[in-house]
Amino acid sequence: MTPTPWLRNGDTIRLFGGVRDDLGISRIGWVDVDASNPARIKGVSAQPVLDLGAPGMFDDNGVILGDVLEVSQDELRLYYVGFQLVEKAKFLAFTGVAISRDRGDTFQRYAPTPILDRCPEGSFIGALHSIAPLPEGGYRAWIARGRGWQELGGRKYPQYDSWTLTSADGLRFENASATRIITPNEDEYRIGRPRANQLPDGTWELRATSDTLSKQYAAFRFTSPDGVSFTRTDETEIPRGAPGSWDGEMTCYPAHLTAPDGTRYLFYNGNDMGRTGVGAARWKE
Image (cartoon, rainbow, N blue to C red; front, side):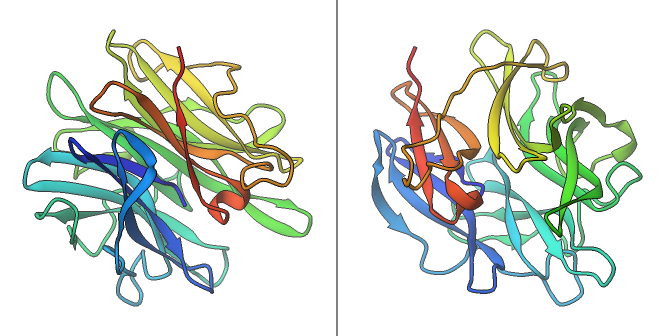
C-alpha cells in the first residue's frame, strides 16, 4: 500500500511500501526494480525495514509510507504514518520518521513519538505524504489532516483533506502554520495522500486520491506555480484497467519518479487500495 519510489542508484529504483499481514496490520518493506524497466524485479526485502512501534506508542498497530527523503549519501529519511487503535474511534494516524545510514537496508526510529501530532484541524489524522527541500533552505511538506468520520453502508470511514507547511530541518513542524490546499468537492468526503514534485520549469504538480459518497476511489493531478496554490485538472492519468483486471476497479495513490534516462513514471496501487498489487505507468508526451 502507498508505494513510494526512491532512486537508490543509477540502475535501481527501490519501492518502499506498506505490506499487510493476515490481520491487515502493515509493516514497511521494499521491492527493488530495474530503473530502465520497472517491470523487472531485482530484489525483495526479506523482512520489514520498519516494524510496529512499542506497545502504547502512536505506531503500535501498523505503519505505511509517507515519503522517502535523501538528505545526504549516508542519511535517508523515511517519513511514515503510524496507526493506533483506541476505544472510542476507529483509529488514530500520525507521522513519524525513521533514518537509514546504509542506503535503505535498515532504519532506526528518530523518536518513539510523532513529529506531526494532533491539532484542532487534525484531531484524528496528521499524515505527511511528501516533503521536498526548498531552494532558500528548509523543507516544504504536503500532508493530510482528518478530524471526522463518514458513515457509509454501516461502516465508518475517515474524512480528511490536504494541507502544506514548512520546516527548517524537516523534523520539527509547527502545526499552526499549515495552509489548507485541497478540499473534497461536493461528491467527495475525503481527498488525501498529496504527493508533490517540482517540474524543470520551477512549477509544481501534485497528485491526490479521493473517495466519493458512492465509494469511487480515484486519483487526480493538480498544478501550482509555487507548491501552495493548486488547481485541479480533469486529466485521467491512470485509467482503470479492463473489467476483472487487477486495477479494473481502482487506480490510486500514484507516486512520481523521474528515472536516470529521463523517463517519468507513476507507481500506483490497484483494486482495494493495494490488495491486488502495485503497477507502473510510463509518462507519454
